[in-house]
Image: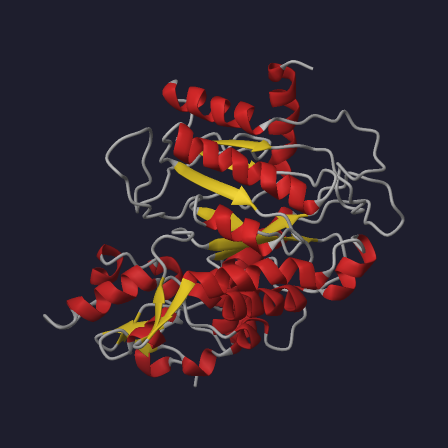
Length: 410
């Protein structure tokens, strides 16, 4: 099979992997060679089928010894198999870069023969790029679970980001759909990368500068098993806390096989979106995973999880923007980390009024129900959270009226 045909097959196969972003590598440039990684990261765009068109996003091989039920390239499927060599991937990357098609490489792979052999070939690929071709652009490599940790270490010293997919949210789900993949083989390289990323010194821990400058990520499939959103969020929280993940990606299950254990329909992409919003609350808004869902097992598909939390805790609102702490402001729907910081800084120079909030980046159409500015409230009258929810979901509540600060329902 010629190179163009293999490129078509293996670039199409990479579209199932969503954990493809740069997120600010700070790899040092030696002053010569091709490409560069900037702290601001690579600007991406995606094609309709999910491929990132800023990075060369390909599989090294779609040949795999595993028989994961959710994977289109499982070993029992009748698929056209194709593979590259390390030299071919290196040459393709350099040629695409010189034509200004790409700014970096995202390289994933099936597991051919055994994990160590596949990982050795991936390491050889990135070594050729860095050492032979002097390519200093962004490289995101997918690690092979079960490979020797020395290979993981060599890869981590050459690439910007390395990730091993956790695959499914729970151990039970992994045993059901991918029994050949043992949980300990998935988390072992994650723990190794986390240990290597933090160097222990006399003064405590510090970030390693020469190993994975863009950190590690992982990905899990949602909707292939009956795991709840609560299961998924708690699993992600453990990954962040235990292994220092830069990010956990969620991939809505795409029906590719007809096994009895798999659902026949694809889950709504809105569920994936809500999980990303919940993930954002954990990482940037100081929400504990337990409080995002409360007593629910699934996220609300009508409203984002931050608004749902606010509706569950209406007794804590409205907050006065001139007095609320930074963390209290972060809890307000329509106020994010940037706008909360601007509010805290701006009010040092004088009292803020409602008309100032939009200029500070606040999404006023949501925040107005949950804040006061200089003692004035610009939301609508509501007797309970159900009434406000009705307004937010339908656009207008039956008894909505202008409300002053002193009319607010306590």
